[in-house]
Amino acid sequence: MAKILIIEDDEVFSELLSMFVEDRGHDPSVANSLAQANALLAKDTPDAILLDQQLPDGLGITFLQEIVRESNHPPVIMITGVSDNALAIEAMGLGAHDFIRKPLEELELETCLHNALKSHRLSRQIEAVTSDDDYRIDISQIVGQSPAILDICKTIGKVASSPATVLITGESGTGKEVVAHAIHHHSGRSGLFLPVNCSALAENLLESELFGHEKGSFTGAVSHKEGKFELTDEGSLFLDELGEMSLPLQAKLLRVLQEGTFERVGGTQTLCSNSRIIAATNRDLKAMVADGSFREDLFYRLNVVHIHLPALRERKQDLPLLIEHLLRKINHRQHTAISHVTEAAWKRIQQYDWPGNIRELENTLTRAAVLARGNSIGAELLSLPNDPHVSPPEVEETVRLISLAQLEQKHIAAILDHVHWHKGKACEILGISRPALDRKIHKYSLLTNH
Image 1 (cartoon, rainbow, N blue to C red):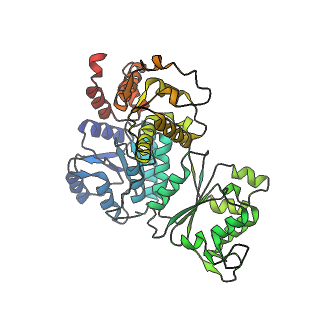
Image 2 (cartoon, rainbow, N blue to C red):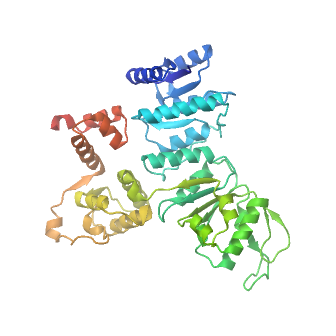
Image 3 (cartoon, helix red, strand yellow):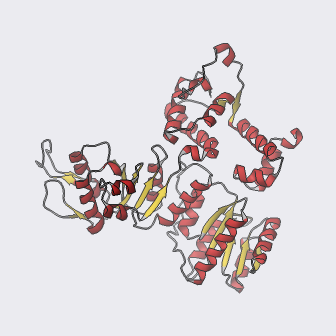
C-alpha cells in the first residue's frame, strides 16, 4: 500500500481522487491548499503526489519546483484543467513524472500512478532540468489540445536539457521546425539555434554551409567561411529534410556525431563542435536504410529520441485554435484585421483534408486575408482544390458572419446535443474540464436554449 498525497482545491474532485486511490488499495491524504500540503509533507513523505495547477495560495508548477529540489523526492503527477502546452513542457522539464489534463480517464490515471510508484520504488527519479525563475518562454506556436500534441510537449520537456540527438518526423508542413525551436529554447544552451535545409542546396554548397570552407578551396571561395557547426557550438543545429543528404555527406555528419570533430572544406585543421543535432525529415528513413540510400549507423545515431508529428487531418479538433492563432499571426504580418470566418468557410475548412498540413492552412488563410474586403474570410476566398462553385455576390452577401466566440458557442451546443447533454462525454470530445464546460454553458446561456 502506497501513500498518495492529493493537492487539489476542488473538494468534490479531491474526494473523487481520494476514492479512486483507495479503490486501488492505497492510502490517500488530501490538501486543499499549498499550506496544507506543506504541513502534511512536514509530517510524512508520500510515495507519490497528485498536484493541481490552480490553488488558492499559489501555483502547482511553483510547488513542483520546490519538491524536485529535494533529493529522492516522490514522483509528481500534475493534473490540471489548464489548456497550456507551455505548462506541460515546463512541468515535464522541471521533473514531473507526468502531466494529465482534466477531464480524467480512469485507465490513463491508473496507468500513470502505477508507473510513478514503480519508478519511485526503483529510485529512478527524473532530474529537474532548471530552477530558473525566468524559465517560461513564449512557445505559443505549438498550438493544440489534442492528446498527440500534449504527448509531444511532454517529450520536449523531458529531453530538452539532454545532449541527445532528436529525430523529428512527419509530413511536410506539420511544424517540425517549430518543435525544434521549442527543444532548443528549453535546453538551456547558450549558443545559437540555426536551421539548414538539406534539400535546398547542392551537395558542395551544403558541405560548405555545414562545415565551412577555406579561402581558395573552390571557385568562388574568396575568403574563409565558418560553417554552421562552428556557429552553433554550445547551441543547436537543425538539419531539415535530412533524407535528402548524400551518402558522402552522411559519412561526414556521422563523424561529427561520433567524435565531435570536423574540418572545413579545403582545410587541414581539426575543429571541435558541441552542437546539439536536431534532425527532421518527411521521408521514411528506415526504408531508405533498407534500400541503401541512407546509412544505418547514422540513422541510429540520429534516432536517439524520436518525435513524430501528426498530420493536420489526424487532429482536426485543433482547427479552431490553429485558425485563431494563425489569424493573429497573419494580421500582425500583413497588417490586416481579420476577426471572422463565415459559417460556409468554417464548414469548408473542416471538410478539407489539408495534405499540406499547417503550412497549407496558413498560406490559404494568408491569401484569403489579403484578398478580403472586410474583416472576414468567406468560403469563396479559400480557393481549395475541388472547391464548389462560388456563389454569386448577391447570395454571398446574405451569408451571416460570425466571430470566433460565436463559432465556439455553436460548436459546444452541437457537441452537447450530439451526446444528449452528457457532460462527461462532452468534456472528453471538447478536451476541457467539467468546470470549464459549466462556465461556457453559463456564458453562452445554453441551458436556456436547451
